[in-house]
Length: 340
Image (cartoon, rainbow, N blue to C red; front, side, top):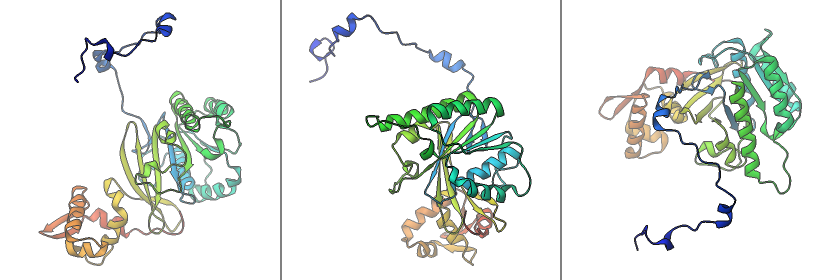
């Protein structure tokens, strides 16, 4: 039966006890005209396309995947003003690194030395105190902001600074509260806050769902960065956020143990497969040859190649014959060394 507004039996009942206590505080409504007149600026990026200022980014990956090394690279680039990974422009300024797991100091110092060499970095400050995030950790971070005026703050890792909870605490709500507090702290300080965390052991179809813990971790953060191991020493990094377009890039380590940019954009998402085909001796290939490399039917491979062509990775030189763009071939020839 269709809904009849005249039929009072279909209307929601009013709680007379609540109404007797007086009206609640009224909603404040913002008119569309006011919204149109607001001066809304695009997010300021501390690292181009990757790290937004005044926001919380959660960086996660499986153990021994290179999370700390990558963030140390970002720290050094921001503190010194050089491009991150030799490629992405940064906003230079003071950097704070809260290494809550102090057992990692030696390992961190080794990674830092490989990045910085023998040159001292004045704008970088490391703290190894073990302290819960709320309330004391945030109090001390605020004091550090007033002292150093950082543009970037790394917290390593969430496992060590997670706010204590009781047996009856709502686990999801507690994690969301931690993310909200860090997000609000980032917004008030203007600094980019990067929280390092571990991936779940379970396999997820969406890599952004791989953070260990509840969905509140990803939902409460302003941006997310996920690292994934590729062949050799290469890593795929995926970034997304509330005010960010989804972005991917691949990086590796060279023979001097410095991290460097390999390729980025949408084609980075398929880099493992693209690299295998682009590394073949022949500069061109057919749909059938590509399908044989990946174990795909001609029809399926054709769909993949159409997508790669859309992304600017390949060019159809003649019907059914393809060649990779020069930038892709150059990136595929780069070699990564050792462990990231």
